Structures are given as C-alpha cells and as structure tokens.
Length: 230
Image (tube, rainbow, N blue to C red; front, side, top):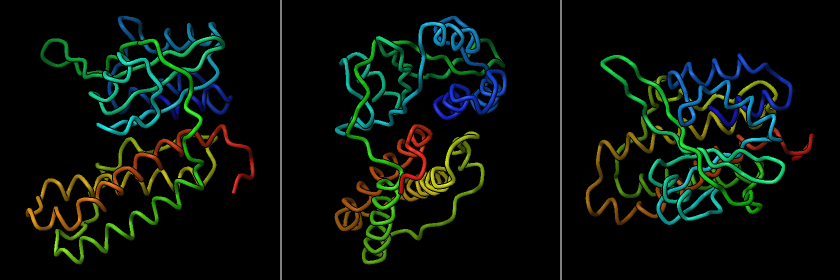
C-alpha cells in the first residue's frame, strides 16, 4: 500500500493526506522509526524522493532487492519491503507489526541503507503473460495430482492488492488477479497436500508463487512505465 499510494502522491494524482489515510486504513497508524508516516514522507520529498519500488522476496528469490545484506535479510524475513528512491541514495523500508498496550495496532517501518534499483524486473505486460502461463500450469498440475480444488477466496483476502489513482487499467487488473491467486495459494497450503501431490505439483505451485509476486511488483511499478506500453 505504501508503494502504490506513495507513488500516486508523488506523481500528483492524490494529496499527501489521502495517500497516508489509505496506507493507515489497511495497517493502522504507521511510523518510520519513531517518526509519523506523514512527516517522514515530507522529509523524504524534501531530500529528493522521486518514487517507491516494491520488493516481495522469498528465500532464494530476492525479488526487488539489490542489497546490502542487512536490508536483504530483513526484507526476506518480513516477506516485503519498499525502496524509497532519492536523488543520490535509496532507503529500504521494512514493515513489522507495531503493538503498544492492549489495543494499539499499527505498522512500524525500519529504515535501512538500500542498493540501486533493480533493472531486471518485468514490465506489467511481461508479468501478466508469465502469470497466465504459470496459472495454467499450476491448474493442470493440481488436476493431474488430484490436489485441492482452487476455491475463490473471500473478499477480505483481496485487501491490500488495490492500486491507487493514476495507475493504468492493466496494472489494476494484473494486481487484482495476482492478489486473488496469492490467496488461492494460501488456501491450498492451509488445506494441505499429500507427499505425492507435493511431488507432482510442487514445482508448478512454486512457479505460480513466483509469478504472483513478480506480477504484483510489476503492477506497483507500472505508474512509471511509458504511456502506451503494450
């Protein structure tokens, strides 16, 4: 949410308060270190902030990360991170649950030094094609293995996949589909697979998981793609 709504703010499609409100609507009050999110974003912009990039790494697949090791390790542990791109540097932001007292629930972002922006990430069009292919292969593998049927997830599972105003329609479509497929993958994991089913479909499900993460990352970066990119 920080990446999508932060980028929409930076590109002039929404105001700062609207961006921060949407981020905090999902995760609760947000701070970076001990600095409230709004103030931190203003400080970043004064320092030359030009955009946010999303990282959705998994063990063995540092998607969106380019070091240094301390940031990569924290991001892999969290399963996600945002990279703030400034004029002369990058700041890696890693979220964690912020619990205070008996009722306060929010998000605390820890700031790290981050490496250069990765240039090998797919465009939203490329990610959409990869996602479609991986989805077909995973569906066939599960059918052949007799694994659990892919149920449509509850709508609550789709929260967090929405993009902000200013993103192209294709990015909205790809992000929504990838988010739903990610929820389907979690449902399959919760229902469990036998050892035989894992052997038959494990590779296809891993490929689908990778395609889902790549599609979500590509969708969040699509606001920077040239208009008319196929």
